[in-house]
Structure formats: C-alpha cells, structure tokens
Length: 140
Image 1 (spheres, rainbow, N blue to C red):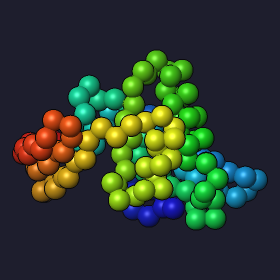
Image 2 (cartoon, rainbow, N blue to C red):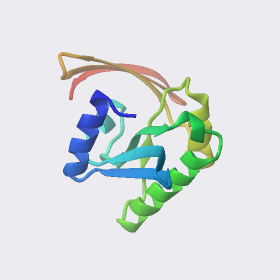
Image 3 (tube, rainbow, N blue to C red):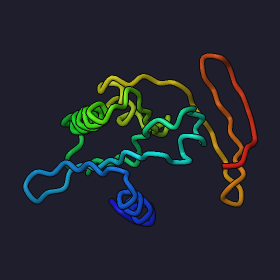
C-alpha cells in the first residue's frame, strides 16, 4: 500500500489533507485519505470543491469485516465536526466490494465518469448519470 501515489498523498497530508488508518496492534489493515481543494473534484465533475474521500485500500487479510464502512463513518464524522455537510467518494465502477462498502456507509452512486488527461492539464470527460451522457474538454 504505497508506491508513487503514496508520495503525492503524503505531500497532500503535509498541506492539510487527512490520512485515516485502521490498525490492530501493529498490523495495518486499511487506509484512506480525505482530500481538500483538489483538482480531482473538478476532473470528476463536482462543483463547489467538496472534500473527496479517495485512495482507500484494505489489506487482503482484513477484507470482509466491514472495516471500510467503519473507516468511512469515522471520516464522515471528522468532516461533520469540521463543518462539512457534503463529501464525495470515488471508486472504479468495476470494484464491487468497494462499492458495497461505500453504499453500506450511506453513499449512493451519483455518476460514472471516464476521464482522459492530456499533457497533465487538458481533460476529456465523459459523464453518464440519470440525465444522460455528456462529453466535454476543459483545462484543469
């Protein structure tokens, strides 16, 4: 549970994002981040820059115990205590275990977004939701 993405995420923690970790003794079981003021919310089509819960991972040995749902409840409690009344979470549509945990924590699917980023700034976005399908280009 690390790699290149972890370096960027930990830099974000230094700048105000939050890392939540579930551990049993010295055994790491789950982690997830709350990202504030990230361009990712723009990329996935969210207005108002709500906090984004992202990069959540549960170790294989700890799966199936409801840790993800419990972690999401803790993260939402933290956000509520800081005055946030709305948050978004992202996952792959194909990640059914993650989707089940997200929905068990009270989230509901909003939209499916396909995104291609060119040269780190030009974004092509395809959004599918209850209003239909939309496509657009923009700079992020």
